[in-house]
Image (cartoon, rainbow, N blue to C red; front, side, top):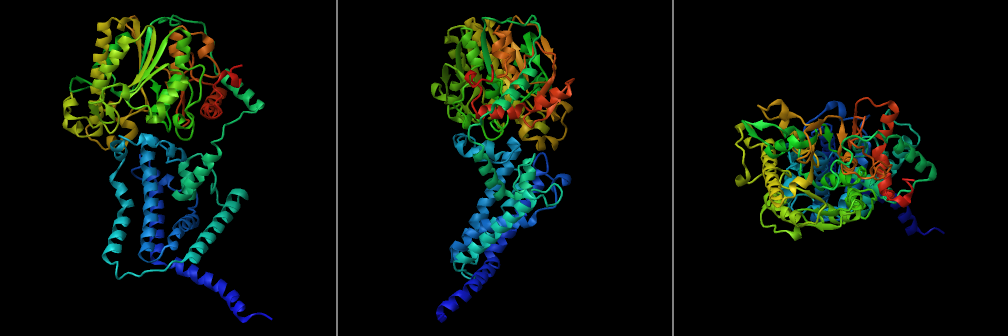
Length: 626
């Protein structure tokens, strides 16, 4: 016989779930925060449609029919956590989830402005970089960003002001689980319908990596995007293994891009001389040989031009690792990984044909020095793996005098000059500068140019002041080397690590009045100088990039061709080439005269390099150079 009490329990369970679900979706705190999350999702999509992430491009907001129900379900599942609390804790828990969502969205916006990508899984391993970067991070703020926090302020004020009168809810675990379950079931259904069975609208997808991260964000909304991206990144974090067929294909592709031209006058021209490599923070090409009201911005560099091989169509190729990517690219002639920073993900990878390894084979002492700590961008352990014998960081210097990110270039270059003068020759010495790092806020006593009023308080003006400052103390370093008698026996290679003011503040430049045409654009160009007193001035204007640095320097110093013209070096020797092309980090190919097959092969280089780094295949024993 059926027990009456059991029958009541069985009959009431579905009703209880239904009532709890209805109570959940009608919960004031849940519904108001859900609406706010949906509005912020839409505002994010509007902002990221604009190249500068500061306006709107109506043509690029929607990639297909807006998946509004997906956004609702994703954010409902996220907010369902709030039902596990009761009373005052519940209203604050919903607001806390809203705050977390808002921080993610603002982080995405700021990171997109500075690095052309969204926050990613690998950034959790890059927390060492946060120290001293506060001003740089907050310089990505724009007035429009305030709209994302208005609701937080209003709801917080209401919760405090009317804490005694507004309705308090009990915990609703069943309702929260019901909302979570229904949301997940719907998302799973849509995934099967659209991704698996292709029954959605044209160009519509859900859990699929689109060619544009903006489209993936559009498909999923911020929370689901980052969950999907994290799982996808984790699944791809395992070492990549080439099978024989793919390895042969890659080898053939890379070999097909190699040139075997007859040697010219530059072959071994600087053999036996010292090599000083200076990676200049944020140095862009547009300032070279320019002046403001008769004041040269880069007087030292302008003077060096008279005895330099100058590459004026040279481009940055960095990705998420920015400055660290520049060091990777120029020291190894490879492209960085396509997600996260190579220096954080693969710090112990080895590169047999790196710049320091090639020069060590030539009998050189190799040293790398930074005015920042070795943990910044994780550079110290990486450059040791890359092959440098001696590594110096900020702990080896007096760091009393600081500007922006750290030790001032004035102080550092003076101290580094003393280091250079103590080195046994011949040497390869590599270093970076810091003072022209964003946000380009120079102290008054470091400003040496008198700028017109339309530039004085702008980021562009601050940038010019910072470049001018570093240029002056580069000149002082050269005087030190001259006084020590080593300058004439030293080749100095100088290049920008990545764009500066045009990379981070293009929107402000576009809105600054009275600018001369040469100030408005830079087109991702960073200059490359190769200076020595015995060189005659020559300008090379073919398309080129940072990946070409190693083969070019190796050729100039007489390294064996098999060490720099191999499938393991992805750049080309700019002093002996018939090609004109550069592959940018966004996979855009700038070229002149390439065949269609060459264009296809070159466009694959960033993905090939990504796989080779993930598998640590830049070693001889990996067989890629056989």
